[in-house]
Length: 290
Image 1 (cartoon, rainbow, N blue to C red):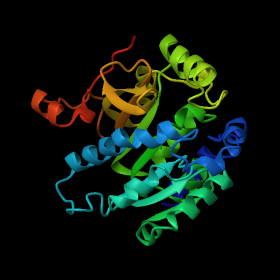
Image 2: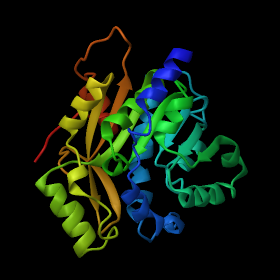
Image 3: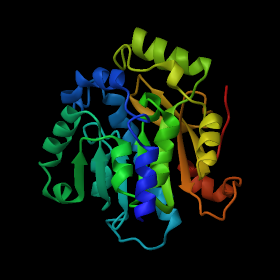
């Protein structure tokens, strides 16, 4: 274990950081607005309607040992870039033990304040103002699940980010990512329309150069010891304020990957029957790009 910890410290040294100071500065001004359901983070509130079931159902399909009413009981989740706790709280309500981390202290203060209103959540969720690489230095193979929702398009070094995720996950642990694909369509809808025309999110929130296609992300994950199990297209309707699963991954997508065993080689994703896909659309396995 000492050797592993020493290797982690060398790998995630000051020269390799996942935190982009310019990105932190962007979100500083909005730190107090996380729980305004009609404000700038409105799309993230409504995203919970599909991302929480996606995480829950995928984890339930991986294990038959779960409690009625607390299906994620006993599962340790790391919510990376947790912001004000919009995803940490519903995962905690499902029974998970959640650690939410964010480099911005103001975000953590907002998250701490909001969870204090619910004594049960106060016990299940802990927040830390720190980077992922700091967690990786002290928490080798600690978590069952990592959630990085709307985060990877803001990190400074994506490969270091994925290496850190691998470091802190237990063997066969799950990694869930939601992000924007890097296509012309995502630029038009995600930046021109969403930011500059409709003002769904503040102007300058996203940098298209940091977007990544699911194919590129899958290659990066599998070269760092993960097996990608599912990729699902997502679509936000600004008029209804709701999200839905779609076949195309050319705008937004959700991905589930698992930390592979040492002896495993890269392989194709799990086959899913038509009946299972109808029952659990979040596990649909698509990689269509426009």
